[in-house]
Length: 180
Image 1 (tube, one colour):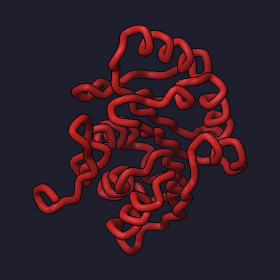
Image 2 (tube, rainbow, N blue to C red):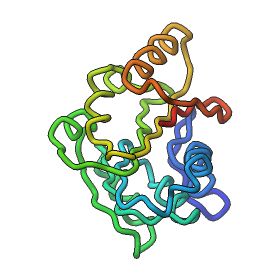
Image 3 (cartoon, one colour):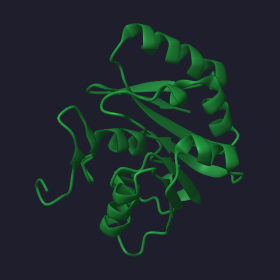
Image 4 (cartoon, rainbow, N blue to C red):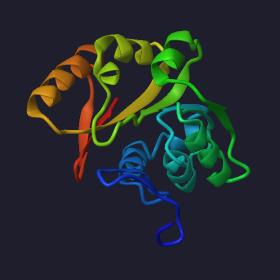
């Protein structure tokens, strides 16, 4: 616990930092006008639920579907979240979930890492297309990425643009956050 908030971290990276998690803050700032209208949100890579905490503090209160493959981390996220937050916990790999799910979401947040690396499946066009299929008609999407290798970064940018041609990239320290 740091400064009265729980953090999920390794020596390499922060995965959650309560209401101080910079990628979640940047996303909520970018989508600030739309936050109150989000009815539901899909979070792929839950960590301790920082996106839930930040979004709720900025006026958003959708029903959250939290997908996290680590059952202990998902349990902690549920325990640390506000008791009145509407959350559906799903302990499953994001790749499997996104293939079987058929719901549409107003907001999707992808924040999946192993250390500082985004797993290869997350950067594939097939995964990104499956995620896009879960986006509601006017839905918003954000994906957190850390550049470790320029070649991987360029390949991912190409894949992302192929699926989501109209996007922006927000820089937040080491993070690059794609928003659609």
